[in-house]
Every structure is written in C-alpha cells, then in structure tokens.
Length: 299
Length: 296
Image: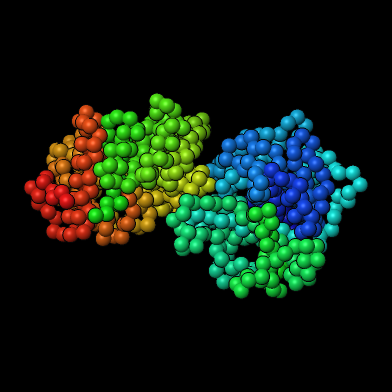
C-alpha cells in the first residue's frame, strides 16, 4: 500500500522554507588580519578569498565564517570599523528565491543586488541593527564559494572541526520590551518558535530562546538590565554560540591554543558551557554542550 | 507639576519647525508629535529637520501620518509599501518609536478585514528592525475602520506585538461611540491617544466632520465637549491606559497666532487634564472653571 504522503511533497507546516541551518556567519571589520588571528585560535582556517571584494572565508568542519573588510555600499549595513561586528547570517533554505520573496511579502526589507558580472546574486534582507540575513540554497551539490571565491593554494579546503565544534546559535541584544517584536519577526519570516523558559543551554541563561524550524540552531534574545532600560536602544548580534559534545575537552584544547575564558563567580567554564573573553574589544564565543547527532535525531 | 504624559502636535502651530519646537519646549512640554511634511518640507532639507528635532530635547511621541495604506493590491500596494518604508526610515532618523497610520479612505481599498489585517501585519514587520510601533487609527469617514472598535478587531486579528491602536477623541465624540466600548479594548493595545475638542454641539454630515476635523479643532477644555472629553480620559485611565496623550488640534485660527500663544493654550489644556481631570479626577468640573484654569 502506498502512503498518500509519498506521492507529493507536502511541506512541513513547521518549516515552510525548508530551513536547514546556517551556511555562514559574517563579520565586518576594518582589521581583517586581526580578526583572522582570533578565528585561527578558535580553530578556523582561512581557505579562500573573494574575487572582487576584500572578503575572506574561514572554515572549520561545517562552519563557514566570512570576514568582510569591504566598505559598506548599502544604507543601514555595517561599516567595517576596528571592533569587529557580526554583520550577517546566511540561512540555508530549500529555495532561496521563494524564501526571499515570501519574506518580502511578509514585510522584510530587501537589500539591493550587489553582485558583479559572473558573481552569485545571494538575496538578502535587513536583520537586527545593521546586520543582514542571506538566503542560500546551494550548499549541497554546489557551493556558493566556488563561484565567488578563489581558493588559497595549498590549504586544505575542509579543515576538520576541533572537538566537534558546530554552529549552535547567535545571541542577539534587543531593546527594552522588544523581545516580543523580534519573536514575531523570526517566527513569521523563518518559522522560529519560542522555547519555554525552563529550556536553557550553556551557562548564560538570560533572555528568551528561539529554536529554528530545523531544530538545530538557536537565537537568544536578551533585553537590557533594569538600570540600562532607559539608555538609547542598541540592538545587534552580540556573539556566536558554538556547540560541542564535550565542553571541558573543547575548553582545554582552546586554552592550549591561547584562547582565554571568562572565570568569574557568576560565569565560568563548566561541563554545560563556557564563554571566551572578548577579543579586539567585541568578539566573544560561547561554548555550549550540544551533540549534533542528538539534534539530527530530534528532527 | 508633571505633564510628561501630554504632548503637542507640530500641525497645531504656525512658523518654522525650529520655532514650533522651541515654543513647545518653552511652554513646558517634553514631547512632540511630528508631521512628516515638517521634516521633508524643511527649507534647509530633511537632514536639517532631523537635526532640529534631535537637538530640541523633545521626545518624539510619534510620526504622522501614513494614509490609505491597507487593502490595496498589485502596483498600488507596492507603491504604498515604498511610501511606508520611507516614512519608517524618517521616523527612525528622528528617533521616533511610533508611526501613526490612519484607516484608509481610498475607494480602491478592499474592505475585507482579513486582507486589511494582513497588510497591517506586513507594515508591523517592516517596522520591527527599526524599533518602531504602528498605531492604527479608525476614522469616521474611512472605508476600512470607522472607529476604534473596528480598528481594535483588525489589530487583534493581525496579532503583532508592535501593532496597536491610536484613538482620537474627536472621532469618539463626533460619531457618538459609547464610552463603555472602551472597556472591551486591551489597554496594552492602545499605543497613542489623541485629544482635541471642537466648538459646536453636533456634527450633521460627513463633510462637516472632515471640515471640523481638519480646520476647527480646539484644545481640550476650550470646546463644547469638556465633560465628554473628561469622561473619555478618566475612562481610559480607569481601564489602565498609561501611554501618551497628544493634542491633535488642527485649527486655521491657531495658524494665524504666534506659536508661543498657542502653546500656552495647549499647556492650559494639559494642566486641566493633568490636575483637574486625572488627578482630582471626579466629579467632572464645570465649564466656567475650565475656561479660567488656575495658572500656577
């Protein structure tokens, strides 16, 4: 007997875009070499350079990080300054054009096309602050980097991940009383769902957690402390969370490479998580206990 | 005395944007509702207007007004989305956190509540990255939402946290909506209340309503409906509204008077509402006393 569901593709109502994790996370900085140094201590390797822009690709396991030093040419996007900022997240979806058009229909702001001749036009919308969100659908058989980037010769294009590190999530700082607005934004456009308060990962428990429709990426929305609620609103992507099955082992590996971790009474490394000290004034990584195979099962 | 809940509207005053802001500030107000035309029509350009507002020390109550946005299709919809994006951007530039949207009067607008809710939800999502809230206001001559009751239904249907209501006392008074209907509105859903009165007892036609609304409004306490207005404000207070009140007084005579004189009248309205109506609350004071309020 044939199951009726086998005859046609019925989209998962929880995942209308076929959201499938993160393709890359981008930093903007006017000091790409300095940031590159920080990324290398975290286990990332430079593997390619953009053909026409001052942009480099770093990789570790399944994680891609782009370092962008090209002056911004679109309003409300991050201008590279000394302190690196997380300037974009690229999400993997089933059909980038469909996901992009659907987002615009729902009220996203589009970014003008910037691709030059023979470069990929990767559709993007405005995210929080000056950040962008890209939609990528070529990550399986083809790679977007094959088109726009030149590989750095003699470098292994697929450096393995240390201690099973993988993208776990991103922490987003939001303004006072703005959590609900951002929940609305991410749930309408991408299908993220808010997790109940009792679900917590890692050692930084503040704010509200949003889970991606593919269930292996999280956004953590954090409002200002009571005494900072009346300061001018600042919203941005604050840090990247990296998952690892064994936080203690990962901390040991990274410490040997020169990475320093926060050790205070409230925040210190444990088997649940750890937080690196800020480098270059703004770059922090959070480690979170997470097993990618568990997450695949959870799907 | 603290009148920080009350603000003026630049459209009530004559003169340059700078002199309006100065008059509002000097009268003792801490917030101002900005008309889009004030910013983009500034003789030294939009950037000069943005600087003037940021330097004024006044908080921006909101930015007004987006018209005829909802219920359109195809090219018209795309055109209005572009207009809305421009207004949101300017609002963001002047550190505004609220855009006022007036219910559509366009004959091209579809009046299906589901479609209207969808369009307003889209507008609300557009406003999220800029930190802006959308306040949707029913208008008695609108085709999509004739009063706050209909507007509240649509806002409820759209179900966006940054989409709420603006309630204009003029519309409530002029169309005789019962105050009891305010009890059905979630106070958290009300983002802005606009207050004004007018001089005649009743309005007989839609034409008269639009003419009165755009040319003959006066400040609260100056018109013929002080009791009703006081009742409106005390009811809002009773249901738990604690947001801003803006005087949306459009009056041709006031545009022929010095801004500081008009701003002083606005302050008397704020004093009456703040001290007499809200603080000492009830019973509603008699008209004679309202016309000669104690100036402290």
